[in-house]
Image (cartoon, rainbow over all chains, first blue to last red; front, side, top):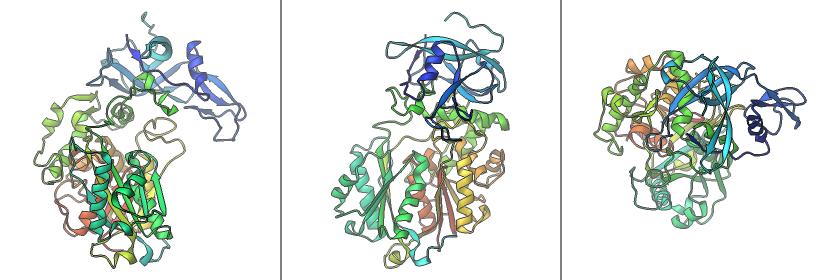
Length: 141
Length: 385
């Protein structure tokens, strides 16, 4: 089981983690002009508004880039595939590709979100949005 | 072009550094003080002549501790640059702004750390990081610079059909330069591409160990003053023909994944355009380029962004021999941060000064213009105003 180094959510990004816990992939959106911004920011760089709501994404996307993460001196339990996903709504997100062998990964492959509850290095739990090859179902983790 | 009169333009008058090692055995403050005193003396000045300083926001050496160690009576200008190694050339930009405006007459620039025997930048971030930018990345496993940057480099590889062995082409050149530079930690230790390919994976399939810079203990310092002041000094001044920086709206020092084209170093491109315009030069006028490299792929991205070759052409540019001995654009003639050592890019500025003074271990004959790129900041230095 991978132990995740937890985030330190703040007023600007807590909605993302709350959404993940509810099985939703949320991106911050300006409530005035509708500009979506990811990573989150407290003010809209387009119109200056402080009012926000959230865009709930479909969870469909494609792999923009990827790496195999296994640090030589402090390896994860199993190597993790870190991906940059181009979401179909037009925004990019960092996540992991799960239940996928490295030799089947390629730039542009279609992926779908899933939500995985992980234990954290400080003894807690966190739900992370993760991705699977499109059409595949997550194994019970 | 600058509207500052020539006699008031900034010059680098002094350079100094400690040895570059894996274990300095002394405090970062001592390294900073040693490098600083060496640079001040190299300029032909005394500590009492220094009235300004610049370092990195990340530097752990307090200005007041430095001036107390050196015996500098008062600073009337003190500034720190944002960022990591991307700020290397911004230190000179800040110093140049200070002396050209008259806010200081002689500015000491320093950077010193025990980055190998003390806090290693390359190790995983274990403690919670107060910078919220880490929140959306570290839980997914992006906890080291190698992983963080590799996620962007993979896209560049994909676009141009490159493999890790292509990045090794740069390492072989850097280690060749380092092999004949006595200051380099890899002095007399050249490698082949096979050696590069035999080094262990750091981030598969992008970076091997020999794609990574060399975590180093050491200190580097430079002294910046005005041309009119340097004219009275015994040292050979090197002229700052351009110094500029670029921070873009959706950029990020590490997590630059969003709203941008990962196949192009946008900040370096902006820095390059501005530098050439300010200096009245073109890429073809540059005799030596010192290019920041925390990891090999950033050399490729900067060669392209700075106009030395076209997008996706850096591999062929290196294969054709342009950046090595006898090439049209010798790059990182000290061995760079992979071969000499990683003092956050500041040792590359020292090498640029040496090339223009004619005192570099791997001297390029007749060097008139040296470009120094730290990606997000850059310099063009000249032998003449």
